[in-house]
Every structure is written in structure tokens, then in C-alpha cells.
Amino acid sequence: MIIGYVIGESKPTRITALASRALSIGEYVIINSDEGKILGLVERSYVSSVALSDVRNFDEAVESKEIAEINKRDKGYTSQIMILGFLDKLQKGQSIVPAIPPLPGTEILEASKKDLEKIFGPDGNEWIRIGSLLRNPEIDAKININKIVARHVGILAMTGMGKSNLVSLLAKQIDSLNGTVIIFDYHDDYSNLAIPRINVIDAKINPRLLDAESLGEVLEIRDNASIQQRILRMAFTKQVKESKDFWMVLNDQVEEIIQLNKKDKKEYTYSGGRVQDKIDDAQHKFSDILDPDVVDPIGLIKEGRINVLNISSLSEKQANVAVSYYLQELLNDRKESIRAKNAKQTKKRSPRFGTSIFVVIEEAHVFIPKGEDTQAKYWASKIAREGRKFGLGLAVVSQRPRSLDPNILSQMGSLAIMKIVQEDDQSQITSAAESISKNLIEQLTSLNVGDAILVGQWANLPSIVHIQEVKEKTMGADQNAVTEWAVAKKFEGIAKESTQKLIQKDLLVD
Image (cartoon, rainbow, N blue to C red; front, side, top):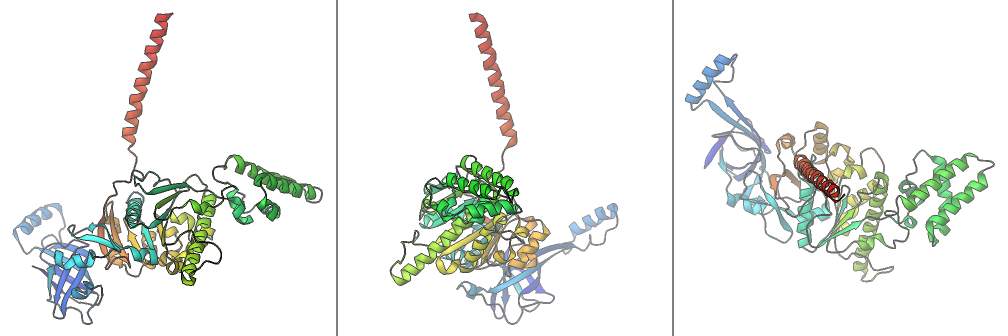
């Protein structure tokens, strides 16, 4: 069915169309060129009216509206269409754009289900369904799992637009393939994910395994407290690391440094006392987090499961150290596993994980911030560069793309971008993703909850999709304050009534 014609100036990558109806942004069309059928994606859509184009007052608008309703030729439907490639080649996984742009007057047809389903819903174990095309809901939208493990993925959106739902869906689908997922859960969004094979772990840090700088961070010694940092560095000896009573011996070492310097360096007395206060906090206030008796924190992660590492009870600095430690250990383990397979033997110890791992960093802007060096950022950067060689995939999830390190974001081979309104966030995405056009970026403000633009290697073509809802996800949604208040008021009334009955009963007994 012909729905329009190519008009004006054409380019091999973009055309302008005049259609018989308003074309929806995200809709796919067929450009019926002499070289063959070309698939196009509607990026912009305009509706104009001849009668209402130059109206100067309200009465004239009323009259012009009546004229427009009578005149069938009044409305004009213009669209900007991005050329994706020849249809037959795209159906075989090849993207070839025409060398010569479609001529003005070329017919534009509706894209059929048959045209699209091979491209967006291909067969194969590596292709998993995550939803449907937004403008063609009868067409499955699938993504290639192998590509996100090998080439990483960024999931970017405003709060409440469906980031955690997509993470849950990817985790659920990977779990169905017996894959290993590790989610660093900064806001306790995933611990109640109702999936049988989930493994929820409270992230712990073994202080023995840290260097002095990292230990200072988890003890929350300020960066500018140079004397406290120096005292801790001097006290954190090999003897302390290997001692049975870690905290007591560390405290004794600090006390010894205070006594040795109290005459010549009086500031050591105060600063040393502050370090001892921090050690006391670690033993009591942070005892659930800092555990010198945890032999192997990585050993708590189970292969072939969804592992949720709950870091919600950690401070930002502590969480940074924890994420850094886990990322380092995971990368080293995967390297060891690949080397062991290649050598057919292990020189040191058996690797913990024999298969690929997919790691998700929630609130990624906290751990891989723009313009600031953190340990977690260092190891995330190494995984972004090297992980593909060792079967370690990375997902960065954030509602503040502008605050993410641009170098790491640019190494995400695929992106899911949901509603984003801030212009600096949009600019960051544009600079990080070559495959997304400015026109598509401008549509981010109009997306609804669960809608996403998919670009990159995990999808055959750029697409606007609606992500299916994960029913097993019980956390992450907005709280219903009105219902909570009503229930609280109801129980308050019941409590008052019960109290009054008890008082009356006591009076009768007396």
C-alpha cells in the first residue's frame, strides 16, 4: 500500500517524504527504489495546514478551521526518514545503504510484518525477547545476549522510566540460559526479585585484603587528613594483616606510633586518637560490613545464578572500595580461567568461575564519575577495555549520563536509552553513541515509561521498543503515599478503640 512519495533533496542516508497520513516517529517504512526495497525509520513527523498557516486572530482561526475541514487537500504530512539499508540484505544481517539516493517521486510503502520480523525477531539461542516494536507491537524486539557480554551495554534513563525493570528482565533471561549475573545493588532494588535462582548477598569487605589507602576510605578517614592517613599507613603492617585479632593489633600499632612521636610530634597524639576512634567504629558501627574473618567474599557468588550484591548499607566510599575489590577479583578470575583453558592446566588455583559473567553496576555515576578518579572507575575501565577477551560483560545503569565518565560510556557497544529531558544528558549520549542520530535523541523527551531506543551491536537496527514488564519485580516502583497514609490512619483508629476498651475494662474491674 502506497502511503507517500519521496520529495525534495534526497541523501543516501536520509530522505524527506510527503505522506497520505501522519507517520509515527519510530515507524518503519519501505522505500520502493529502482535498486530494490529500502528500509527506513521515521525520525521526525510534521503536520501542516494551508488554511491555518497564516492566521492572525481567533475569529480568523475559526473560519480557517471550517475551510480546512471542507478542503481535503488542506493537510500536509511531511516526515524525515533515516535510511537503514536494503531490506533483503538487512534480513540477512547485512547493513548496506544505497550508493545513489532514492529519486524524488519514489513510492513509500507500509512495512509489513513479514518485512520486519526477520530483522527484529531473529531465531537463535543468543537472541532473547525483551519486548515489542513500539509502533509495530505485533513484532517481537529481540537483543543479542552474546553482544552485551562481549561488548557491554549502557542503560540510561530518568528515575522511574524503567531502568531496573530492564535490568531485571535481562537478568531473568540470562538466568534462563544458566548464565551468571552479578548486580551491584546500591538502593536495595533487587533483593526481593521473585525469581527462584536468585542469590542475595550482603556485600562484605575483608580489611586484611585491602591496601592502606583503601582501608582509609572504608574507615572514612578524610582525604585531607594527611597525618591520620600517614599513621594508618605506618600501622597497617604485614603483622597486622596476618594477626588473629585484626582490629586489636591494628589499634595497638597505632598506639605504639602515638607513644613514639608524642614528644616531638604532638599532632600525632590527636590524629592517632582519631584513627583509633575510626577503628572502634569499624568494630562496632560497621561490624556487619567490615569483617576480617571473611575468607573469600567472591566465593559467596554462585555461578549460573542471579547474584544480587547488596551494597545499600555501605557509605559511598565503602561501596566504592567494595565494588572496586569485586571488579578486580572478577577480572583476575576470568583471566585465570581463560589462561587455564588455553594451557589445559592451572598453575596457581582453580578459577572460581568457568563461564562468562555479566556484571551490572547500578547508580554507575557514583562509581565511575566524570572528572574524578575512583578505584571502582579504574577497574570498570579495565573491564570495559579488556572484558570481551575474558568473557566479562559490563552494564552501566544511570539516570545521570552527564555525570558518567565519557570514556567508559563510549566503550558500551550497545545502549538502551529511555526518557531523558536534560539537554546535557542528551549531549553526553550523542557524543558517546555514533549510531544514534540527533533526530532520535530529540525524541527522548516524548518516550513513556517502559519505552526505549535501542542502538548498538545488540540489535540489528536502531529501534524504538516497549520493554515488557517483569512481573517478578516487586521493588523500584513509586510508593503509593495516599494508600500508606490511609492504612496508617485506619490502624491508628483501631489502636485508639482498643486502648479505650482496655481502660473501660480496668475501671469495671476496679
